[in-house]
Image (cartoon, rainbow, N blue to C red; front, side, top):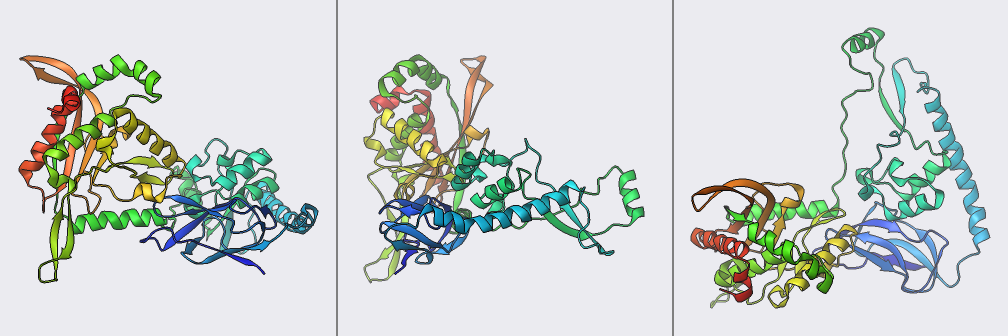
Length: 452
């Protein structure tokens, strides 16, 4: 009897997912607990293991399809997989048909975009796939497509994607291979222009192909979740941002002096993030409102009443670039960690974030967040807090600027820093002095070490 493959429950607030790369195709054998398919949530990518040893009987949801939690996305047959020869014989006719159809489309391109159907009122324009060298971003190539491309010797980035947002699917690579590497042309219908109109366009220096187009791409669950959280933050909190600037001279000198010995001893590079995390913890201890949140709790009469919940632990969210956007994994109990432990944790988050391998529990919670827009060249910004947190520290690019020091104008590496806070529980004076404390700690790193 077929065994259902269902989307598992992956979090309290997650109801929809997107099917990622299938690691097995119909008829393939799979061992118990072997990964079958990647499932993309609004926070991370997880893998669905095989519930039993057997073979894939049927796949209902393909790569890029949306599915609800608990929905059946495929079936397994318990026991041995069918012989490879049997699967190959069944697949051959389909492959032959696909190659023939693709070859037909390719010949249309080779014919210079000949009209199909011969209608006098409209022309079917056949536009070839992008030229080699203008390929898709590597992040748009799904893992299964990349594996298929490697097996057939095709550059995956040069294949035209048909998935959501132009993502390249395994089927796109197979079509590309079947068509002899010419790609899957895009067929677009548009009204035929008169000869006079064409002459006018040519005389104005405009190509007929330069038409105004729009493309509707469904928002991914991750993008939807980010959008909802940003709107929630703006609508529920009283957001205000204060700024300061930090002279990074001492921190850069410290790093340059010890970076080689540090990496040799701890196996990780000495960066600035660990210093800012430690400086933030130092400031949060002095101004606990920024490590607190507003929470509805029963009052003395049993009715819901807003409370300010203070924490004596410091779980610092650190924004990193993920394969599908910005994610904020959490460094838990950061106050107990050394500089090296924090650097290792952030480096690990960054590496796994790029591969979409972060776990859901690593992306949940947090008492305060640090976002570093400087890695993208941002000079100044107003970050948005992550509800229900009450503060977020924004770091920016380091630039050499002239500053006054002891009556002299000198060039120093300067960074603007920003603190966005919830004015409902954080007063302006506390926010300004909090940011000034971070400035003091970074400009004189010894303060963090001896806690003065």
